[in-house]
Length: 132
Image 1 (cartoon, rainbow, N blue to C red):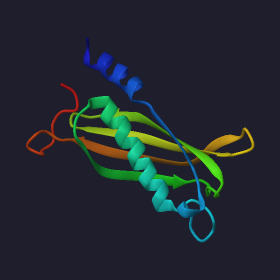
Image 2: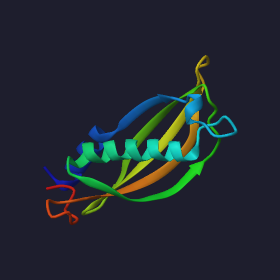
Image 3: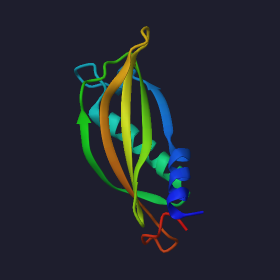
Image 4: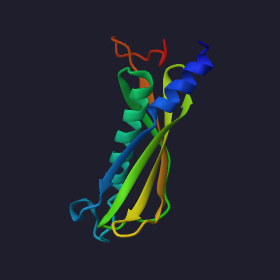
């Protein structure tokens, strides 16, 4: 199997969906999802997708350009969708979108989007190839 074919198969397998509810304990003084909570959820979903891709120990090395397109009110459902965006030799970049929906309506739309980069670590805790 070629490297490109393996990346394509692993990329499809790694897609991760996480659904959560926004309860008052996760909100700020505006009664919307606290930004730090959203970032933590996104990092976790990205970590799961990256781990599914390579099945190696990983560390987050950066989060890039997180766009908060709209606030997410308490009492809504969110779905995080994490997809592999780029595979380097020792790193993986994951795109995470957060979709919001009202609990009592079918309207779901993107509210937050961002990318997270991970590096695979070998037994010596130094970067190691993500595949192979």
